[in-house]
Length: 475
Ligand code: FAD
Image (cartoon, rainbow, N blue to C red):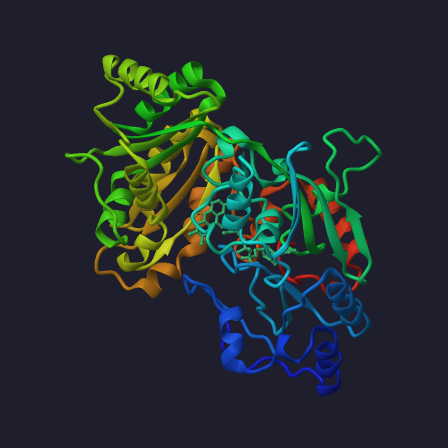
């Protein structure tokens, strides 16, 4: 998609030396082989180039890096776990990479305020584990949680599988510490739910994809740890049936419904065929599946789950269902879901759309989009799956069997245009949770309110007048 393997533009040796003095010898990487891991990403859709990767160990070091970079107009790309899906963390034009991975301290856990203050490089799974150790829940959960970082999650405003009940990353952050482009440190870390003292500044940096400043720490909300969690894998005939099941589940379980994932037959097939240690939870194949989870602060989530499924079976909405009998089976259900993105790779080129539409419009969206992409490229294989409860689908399309993957991927933007037209007609968004990065940058001005774009540009110009913060991303 955006592959640049040419040598990076040189950086003056004296300048490299100045950066090296800030972070220490070991943490200023100039060797091309060592830099490789920071300029490419797992799916090989993006490959960038950089003369220098810096691995600072403190907010003060990041502040010094930004100050030096702005004095010499050196462009910087902040990077966390490098799991982003829109090329935002890749230095496409020889920028210096600032890796946040060494900022990995959990500064404080406060169970009375129900907050946890983490540095930006803390891996999401570590934050989840730390919360569990003090009998709390940090609910953000996504397939990349073993390697993505809190800074990256906030910078992309990640959603994930529990957004239905707990909201997206933005709703889990009470305050931030951010280093601005000129090196100033903005400290709006806060444990307060209530603080009406003017503009909500920390929210500007959430979802900004590193274009306005570098997040160095965050105060996150903690939630009560559910006492009971029950997970079901359900087979049904159509997205419409899944929507009816969702409606029953929401009316019977309300906030206890913490996940509701819609999976197409092809997405499940690919995961079983290519995923590691993935098994089919049901005896027979179904055109559509739902992975749903109920979490209860009390001891029992099974009774309400059985009641929901019982009613749905009676009303012939659900054809088959299994409730996980133990933690291993539950992990197996989620493994099938989590392997879904990776499992598309062996099937050749995959054109991805991370979209949202109003929940009620999901079945119509799938029907219209399927017809449109197959009309555009006969034999193309839609592989939709995602967070039906949030109206968010990963509407991925695999190449026709036997087609040339480069030829197929060359039609990425053409297919985007067809799919996005349907999304926009239905009042949806072309990027539900992965962000804009470079992947959707050129489409953004066509789909977003003109005044909103003007304000975004004005905010960018005010906070980063020299344009050194992750240039070429988002805007
Ligand atoms: P990176 O990839 O390193 O960076 C992402 C962006 O944030 C870049 O623009 C970067 O410049 C910026 N950035 C990173 N750290 C900072 C910082 N400290 N300060 C300022 N800017 C920064 N996303 C979802 O929303 N929901 C999902 O369900 C989901 N599932 C995924 C499953 C898989 C298997 C994968 C690979 C990705 C998935 N994602 C999902 C994408 C998601 O955006 C990322 O996984 C994650 O949020 C990014 O975190 P990261 O630390 O890897 O950030």
